[in-house]
Image (cartoon, rainbow, N blue to C red; front, side, top):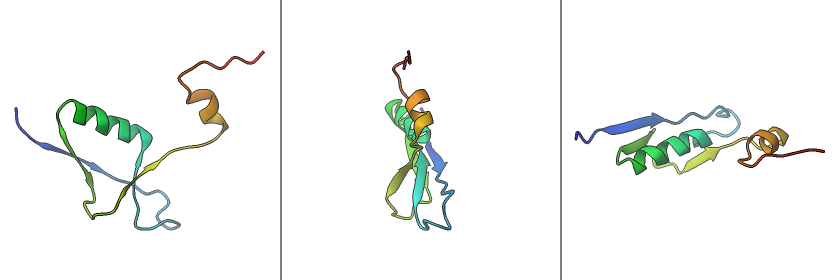
Length: 74
């Protein structure tokens, strides 16, 4: 097996408000965890010693559609 490094580019959509942040989405975090669990090496770019931060949505739509359990309204 070839030991190649998978590189994932971080993206900050709020760069003008919150500069110098290394952001990934929650879905990207899950992908990275799955790749690492499968034995792949993953590097998040840019490699600038900034801490990695997770970007996620928070709101009413996440309550209804983001839960693993079903929500029933009577």
